[in-house]
Amino acid sequence: MKARSAVPFDDLSRRDWAKLAGLLALGMPASIAGPASAAAGGETASAKFPSRFVWGTATSAYQIEGAVNEDGRGPSIWDRYAHIPGNIADGSNADLASDSYRRYKQDVQLMKALGAKAYRFSIAWPRVFPEGTGKPNPKGLDFYNRLLDELMANGIEPFVTLYHWDLPQPLQDRLGGWRSRETSKAFADYAGYVAGRLSDRVTSFFTINECSRLVHLGHGLGSDAPGLRLPPQELHQVRHHVALGHGLAVQAIRAYARPATRVGPAENMVICVPAIETPANVRAAELATRETNAGYLNLIWEGKYTDAYLASAGNDAPRYTSEDLRIISSPVDFIGLNVYMPDSYVVAADNAQGYELIPLPASFPHMDAPWLKFGPEAMYWGPRQAASVWGVKSIYITENGTSAADAPTKDGKFYDVDRIVYLRNYLTQLQRATSEGIPVQGYFLWSLLDNFEWSDGLEKRFGLYQVDFKTQRRTPRLSASFYREIIERGEVV
Image (tube, rainbow, N blue to C red; front, side, top):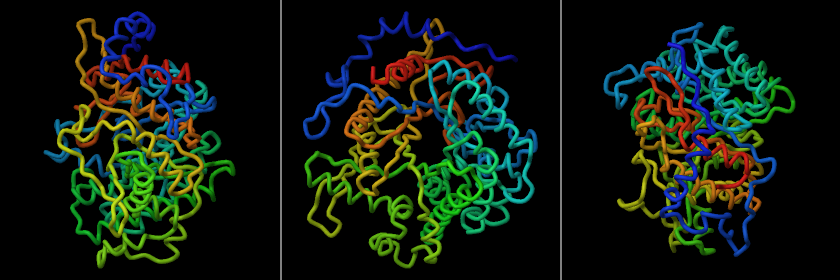
């Protein structure tokens, strides 16, 4: 069935916005209804984001492309995992997903309708190297060449993620996946190959998306692919190999991509928020940020594991060489932060570490997904801590968004005011950060459209555009109009 074109925005945003304005404001603090609230220290924040701020949307290959058996693509660990009964909440899989492999031109027009100037998407490793290594598949890279050409023709800058969890299954079968440092080397070879061929149009590459989740859920809890439950020493070693893969990929990109190419990680950094903004608590939150990110981000920036990390791991600490640490800490150009929620609130404490992590109470507010706690201040403190703890000079918010209730009205429209409330609060905190000079250069809203949401299947919907997975029709939600207004004005509305 041919996909129907998207519903025009004007109908949704102009006519209906006025009717909903009062509803949207219910329960909102006065400081959010207008310009951003005063920044720390009593300074008044600017009402607008920087003039060159990059506004975009984000997706990942496995979640939207479908076409898993077409044009020479090989299987990934998620293909196998999703087809094992009981692994996916609704029993679905991503064999079709949002069918963006066929509908990418339509999806680019959805971005253009938002006014978005950038798009963060991932390359499917098994589409380019079906075996993970060896001979590349030209048809796989051809798809991304077509996508890039379409983006460029519509004035949308591509930001490419090289690994968003879809490890080629042959590497898992042959090497044990990320349990082997040979996978780190294979990833670098793939990264160098792709960057060498796409950097004529792509100037920004993210190496690995969310080391923390792929290690913890995929190899510790078994609730993501490849579904392993490894003992502590092996888990630490997997994390080290992922970090090594990042560093080797940085070096490969430097070697094979064009000279102006930029590269960095995209991570769901552990965000530590001072429970009360006193100087002592702010300093305690910085200490907590360094230590709770010691196994990956801090390792990348400092080139060493912290003493506390190694002491805590004890005999289960990863095995590594000084050369490993040198590679992992290869200089990068930016950091991508995936910000959804605060991980911990922090108070200063008179103990060896200098801080106390406060557990979130059972009554802590959350969005449609129970794990997604509603803490907008994470969007301020995440970038601030990255800048203060590691001296990061360039930051992108590579993911931020929420699933939301998905009930259309009788006229078939989707008034996702819960998502709008979430985004307004988080973006207000991001504007606070930029007004204070924290070097956030862009924001990628997750997600452009509904997709396969990993172990939640098709149930949880994060899209600005609603997808009918039976017909593949895309319909803009009210949040699409909201985001378009923010992009157009350069300020929170």
